[in-house]
Image (cartoon, rainbow, N blue to C red; front, side, top):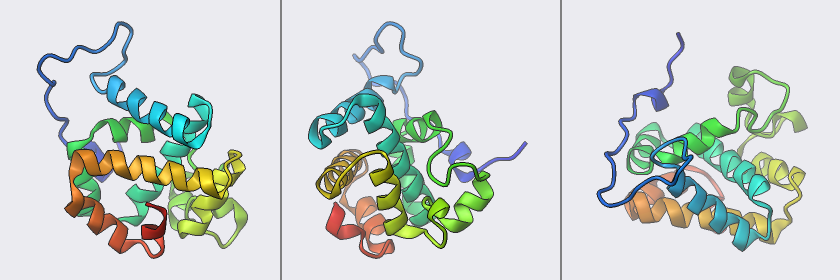
Length: 166
């Protein structure tokens, strides 16, 4: 069985007084849906498209940011790991995860990778530049609320050009 660093992030305990809604598939589903709703509302997208956009952004962060910062983020907001997992094909469609990881999310555009490839993937979902900024802002605001400024600063500082989108 193949394991990734994400498999070893310990989930946080249940939040006292907060019950998962009937039919929820995990204890973090309410948090996931809150983030998806925020992105959908602020980017003017349907929830299913917003979920794909969030998964693309999170997949990009998981691959491009320092491992310790990603682990800290996912430890404090484990629902983000579930969002990544909820979208099996995040970028570089038609490629295996190993090739996609080597070439970046936008590897289908050849030579892609990094922030420009992520933008290309988001445009393929129908987002314009203003909507892409709204997606990034909401994802990073949510991450900052859960993991704090230090973790988000480490992520943003490690990815060239990212700061202008968050």
